[in-house]
Amino acid sequence: MEHRNKAIEALRSMLPILLITLVMTGIMIGVYALLGRLTANVLLGAALGTAAALLNFAVMTFSVVKAESADSPERGALQVRFNYVIRMVVLAAVLIVALKTNVFDPVATVLPLCFIRIAIFISEIFRKKEAN
Image 1 (cartoon, rainbow, N blue to C red):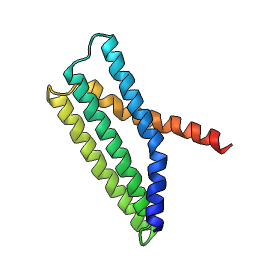
Image 2: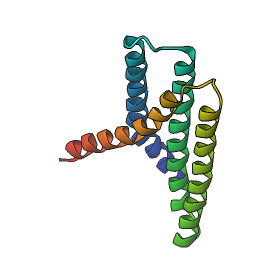
Image 3: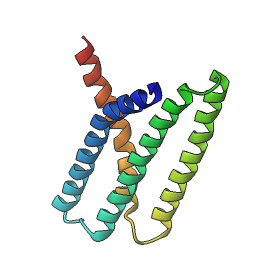
Image 4: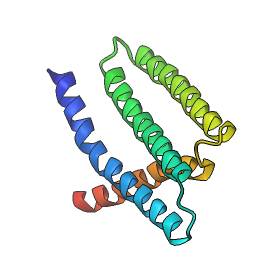
Protein backbone atom coordinates (compact mmCIF):
# COMPACT_ATOMS: atom_id res chain seq x y z
CA MET A 1 0.00 0.00 0.00
CA GLU A 2 2.86 2.38 0.80
CA HIS A 3 4.36 1.77 -2.65
CA ARG A 4 1.03 2.70 -4.22
CA ASN A 5 0.84 5.93 -2.19
CA LYS A 6 4.34 6.86 -3.30
CA ALA A 7 3.39 6.19 -6.92
CA ILE A 8 0.32 8.43 -6.61
CA GLU A 9 2.43 11.17 -5.02
CA ALA A 10 4.95 10.80 -7.85
CA LEU A 11 2.14 11.26 -10.38
CA ARG A 12 0.99 14.41 -8.61
CA SER A 13 4.50 15.86 -8.62
CA MET A 14 4.93 14.94 -12.31
CA LEU A 15 1.76 16.60 -13.53
CA PRO A 16 2.99 20.22 -13.53
CA ILE A 17 6.18 19.18 -15.30
CA LEU A 18 4.27 17.29 -17.95
CA LEU A 19 1.87 20.20 -18.49
CA ILE A 20 4.67 22.77 -18.72
CA THR A 21 6.45 20.58 -21.27
CA LEU A 22 3.29 20.30 -23.36
CA VAL A 23 2.76 24.08 -23.22
CA MET A 24 6.36 24.71 -24.27
CA THR A 25 5.97 22.28 -27.17
CA GLY A 26 2.81 24.13 -28.19
CA ILE A 27 4.73 27.41 -28.11
CA MET A 28 7.48 25.83 -30.24
CA ILE A 29 4.90 24.74 -32.82
CA GLY A 30 3.43 28.25 -32.74
CA VAL A 31 6.85 29.76 -33.43
CA TYR A 32 7.32 27.40 -36.36
CA ALA A 33 3.90 28.51 -37.67
CA LEU A 34 4.72 32.21 -37.23
CA LEU A 35 7.95 31.71 -39.14
CA GLY A 36 6.05 29.94 -41.92
CA ARG A 37 8.07 26.75 -41.34
CA LEU A 38 5.34 24.52 -39.92
CA THR A 39 5.25 21.22 -41.79
CA ALA A 40 4.09 17.69 -41.14
CA ASN A 41 7.73 16.82 -40.36
CA VAL A 42 7.78 19.47 -37.61
CA LEU A 43 4.54 18.15 -36.11
CA LEU A 44 5.80 14.56 -36.23
CA GLY A 45 9.13 15.60 -34.72
CA ALA A 46 7.39 17.54 -31.97
CA ALA A 47 5.15 14.55 -31.23
CA LEU A 48 8.08 12.12 -31.19
CA GLY A 49 10.31 14.35 -29.07
CA THR A 50 7.56 15.20 -26.61
CA ALA A 51 6.47 11.59 -26.25
CA ALA A 52 10.07 10.48 -25.72
CA ALA A 53 10.73 13.23 -23.17
CA LEU A 54 7.55 12.61 -21.19
CA LEU A 55 7.90 8.84 -21.25
CA ASN A 56 11.55 9.08 -20.22
CA PHE A 57 10.66 11.33 -17.30
CA ALA A 58 7.77 9.12 -16.19
CA VAL A 59 9.87 5.94 -16.34
CA MET A 60 12.65 7.67 -14.40
CA THR A 61 10.24 8.86 -11.72
CA PHE A 62 8.63 5.46 -11.26
CA SER A 63 11.98 3.66 -11.27
CA VAL A 64 13.14 5.85 -8.39
CA VAL A 65 9.91 5.16 -6.50
CA LYS A 66 10.35 1.44 -7.10
CA ALA A 67 14.04 1.57 -6.09
CA GLU A 68 13.07 3.10 -2.73
CA SER A 69 11.36 -0.17 -1.86
CA ALA A 70 14.31 -2.36 -2.90
CA ASP A 71 15.76 -4.92 -0.51
CA SER A 72 18.85 -2.80 0.09
CA PRO A 73 20.07 0.69 -0.84
CA GLU A 74 22.75 -0.85 -3.05
CA ARG A 75 20.18 -2.88 -4.97
CA GLY A 76 17.98 0.20 -5.37
CA ALA A 77 20.92 2.23 -6.68
CA LEU A 78 21.78 -0.56 -9.11
CA GLN A 79 18.20 -0.63 -10.39
CA VAL A 80 18.23 3.13 -10.94
CA ARG A 81 21.58 2.98 -12.78
CA PHE A 82 20.44 0.12 -15.00
CA ASN A 83 17.20 1.94 -15.76
CA TYR A 84 19.19 5.08 -16.62
CA VAL A 85 21.29 3.18 -19.18
CA ILE A 86 18.20 1.67 -20.80
CA ARG A 87 16.47 5.07 -20.94
CA MET A 88 19.51 6.74 -22.54
CA VAL A 89 19.79 3.97 -25.16
CA VAL A 90 16.12 4.43 -26.04
CA LEU A 91 16.52 8.22 -26.26
CA ALA A 92 19.61 7.80 -28.45
CA ALA A 93 17.64 5.48 -30.73
CA VAL A 94 14.86 8.07 -30.98
CA LEU A 95 17.34 10.78 -31.91
CA ILE A 96 19.10 8.56 -34.45
CA VAL A 97 15.77 7.74 -36.11
CA ALA A 98 14.88 11.44 -36.20
CA LEU A 99 18.24 12.38 -37.72
CA LYS A 100 18.53 9.52 -40.21
CA THR A 101 15.04 9.70 -41.67
CA ASN A 102 13.38 12.56 -43.44
CA VAL A 103 10.16 11.93 -41.53
CA PHE A 104 10.90 13.98 -38.40
CA ASP A 105 12.26 17.50 -38.12
CA PRO A 106 15.41 17.01 -36.00
CA VAL A 107 15.17 20.35 -34.18
CA ALA A 108 11.49 19.85 -33.35
CA THR A 109 12.39 16.39 -32.05
CA VAL A 110 15.28 17.50 -29.84
CA LEU A 111 13.78 20.65 -28.33
CA PRO A 112 11.13 18.85 -26.21
CA LEU A 113 13.96 16.91 -24.58
CA CYS A 114 15.31 20.28 -23.45
CA PHE A 115 11.85 21.51 -22.47
CA ILE A 116 11.48 18.78 -19.87
CA ARG A 117 14.57 20.05 -18.04
CA ILE A 118 13.27 23.62 -18.15
CA ALA A 119 9.89 22.40 -16.89
CA ILE A 120 11.56 20.64 -13.95
CA PHE A 121 13.41 23.85 -13.10
CA ILE A 122 10.22 25.95 -13.29
CA SER A 123 8.28 23.41 -11.24
CA GLU A 124 10.95 23.43 -8.53
CA ILE A 125 10.83 27.23 -8.32
CA PHE A 126 7.07 27.16 -7.74
CA ARG A 127 7.37 24.27 -5.29
CA LYS A 128 9.90 26.21 -3.20
CA LYS A 129 7.67 29.30 -3.22
CA GLU A 130 4.71 27.20 -2.00
CA ALA A 131 6.83 25.70 0.79
CA ASN A 132 7.69 29.16 2.14
